[in-house]
Image (cartoon, rainbow, N blue to C red):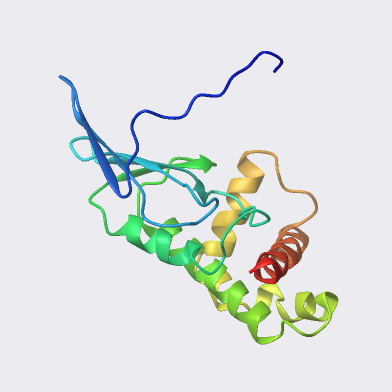
Length: 181
């Protein structure tokens, strides 16, 4: 990237930016921190489609550089919009609000477990977050994650091992995120 001179944007927004063209109206939205501090979504109200980038994953989320205290609320704010299709950062296009709500519940549950036990050794907290006991992984979300991982060749081992390894990684990432404040 030698010789590259970054340029500051000449258009910025705090919450919404509406772009009008002949084909449709596009809305660029910011609803809070999630995967990063500047996650922006593109929503086409006329086509009832929203692209969320890495705020929504079809897989277990990467929380290492995220904001686990804010992320669930951001997902729920997106779920309030009028859409029929969600294009996330990874995985299949979704046709319901379910994955947004389920991922919010999952990150919220992980954050609660880690927060309540923050002073304990990380390995002990990871053992407390056993997928079989997590409410957020029941009622289809755990199966959804396993199915998406299998579909895209991202599952190693059986479903239980896949979820256990992913949850342990997510617990470590939430712990790290909470430690940095």
